[in-house]
Image (cartoon, rainbow, N blue to C red):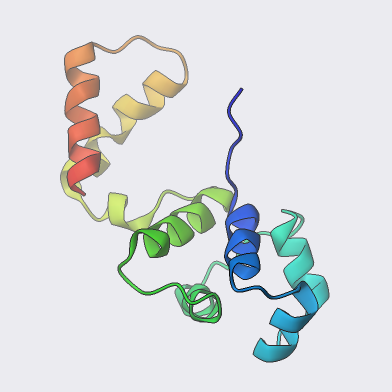
Length: 124
């Protein structure tokens, strides 16, 4: 059984990694503890604006361009039901997304096409 990591889970892991309680973290960063609690529990969607996401990332000491940075942004987009911008901005990947969607909806796709799509995504 696999457990899906959500934006809220990742946010909370990073906060706890800083050895901060929810109240400490919020007080230090002038955030509302109720809203951050809802965000961490998945009761409130991640912010849609990149400025707010960047602000939260800085509070969590997530450096721009790192693996954690991309994971943070990707989880925010996915939790909001959006495709990460980096994938949409890559023309080859964007045109291959219908193949991915067909695969996810249970329609057959050749291994060769699936491998090509995976390679495109890795390079994005």
